[in-house]
Amino acid sequence: FIGVYGHQSTNDKPYAYSYAHDETSQGDVSGVVLLRMPHHPGLFELRYIDAFTRETITATHLIDVHYPCPNECSGHGRCEKDTCVCEGDWTAKDDCSAKTGITQ
Image 1 (cartoon, helix red, strand yellow):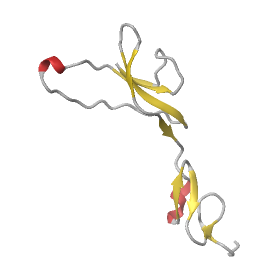
Image 2 (image 1 turned 90 degrees about the vertical axis):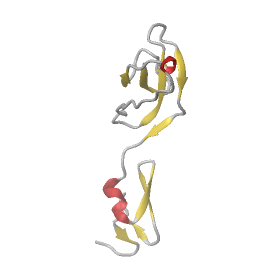
Image 3 (image 1 turned 180 degrees about the vertical axis):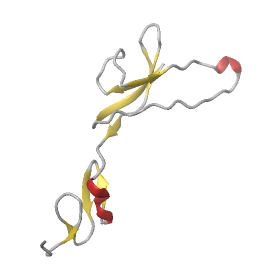
């Protein structure tokens, strides 16, 4: 089966999983598996696990999950790992919602 796992978690504790099987004996068959990512930040990976032995057959690179930036950075910055990096003279709080030098 295919599952979403915490970076250092064991193969018996997936956050989400879906059963899959090898269809190569039936020709070139491909498919889509939808899995929900955890709703909290952390490092995760997708693993293809042997359902009987629980051995990892293959795994993806790490997936770094973050919370979204507040107020989408008010349209005046970019979101980097749940922190707004404000452009030009935009600043304030945590969402780039005010110009430098202007107080409210």
